[in-house]
Image (cartoon, rainbow, N blue to C red; front, top):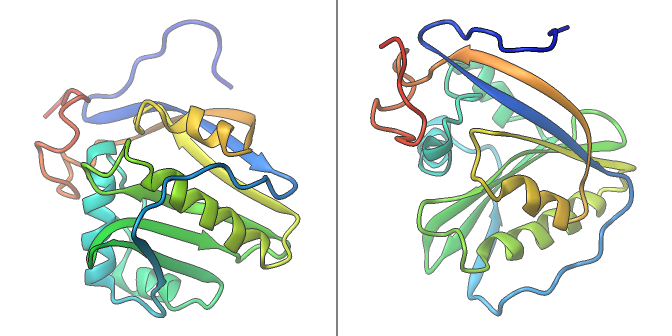
Length: 197
């Protein structure tokens, strides 16, 4: 347990505050823009395609959770029928990632949710979240949960709360900076200074 006060972060690492949120009953659909978008479930996605989309969506926010996985572990995850990977398409282009994890009985984790750069602010996020909520609760779950952190988009936490998720726990995460260990380009997420590299 961290005590009150400041705590040093090792050189070459990032630190963030992680907020865990949950939804214990299906939230009502929120008004959305009339957009010509398509959501497609990708059965058994290829790891290369998946990682390209994961980086396209997550690099601005230093997503690293799937990048450091052993190839065999990633393939096993992506081939698990309880992990549902969806791609948001805008005029045929891959424009977002929705990953729903049903591996815990009775629950769904919103494992990854995001748009490619340039897609935020035009209503696609609300469109995608409405479908995420419907897909998750359509599986007969009793709990839908997600976590976000202070490295994510500044509006992410508020967006999840407005979508019907309720914060219930906070943690501090310290991890090697993915840019310094070769998982992401060094110029990714310029809003987060590189320290120790």
